[in-house]
Image 1 (cartoon, rainbow, N blue to C red):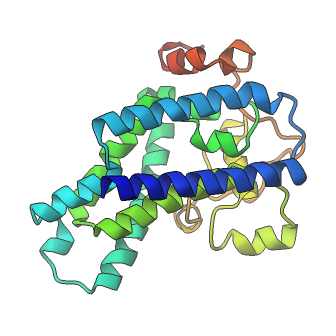
Image 2: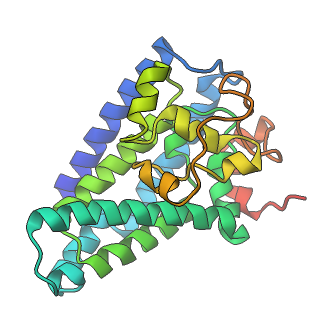
Length: 264
């Protein structure tokens, strides 16, 4: 299980990353003032640290939590009989909803925002932004998802599929790719698109506090946090956090230390 999940997730990550990176180079949505090389070293670097630390603490990731719950018959689906297809779909939906509310919490609570703003402090947005998260946020996210997995008694396969989908869609919806407007309008009813999520990375706080979905787009519409477009337009909008826009803020060490920095 450990080897299988790691291989599947790594393979999916590498495949989606390469596709998005090539697509960005061929058909970018926005001109980027900061070179990809400068940003990618730090963004990919922090993702590598997260992967290393997570594998030390929980080698099989969320799948290990599901296996643990299964071994002890913990959770709803080990108590209440349900068809396998229902448990699978319900797990994916509930975990995605959990991530949506986790994301909102990380914006509302100042202590969590200090950690999450590392993700938002990227002054450009592309496929590497989708893997730029502080290690503390990754640990907190795993704790929250793990609690939901145990409460559900989630099937292992459903958890693995969700984790692969979440990782893949995070890279997709952060990508700096150009989609025809007609395609984007249709697609954003099914999945969070790059144009939809880019609004969330606006420097304007009312836009930052919108479009929290990572995978499924329905939660934002259902809970009133959906915003169709940025007020300045995609080409002119400013990405990032006002207090962290310098070249030093893009360095890996600065990113790791950023949660401890106060802002006025």
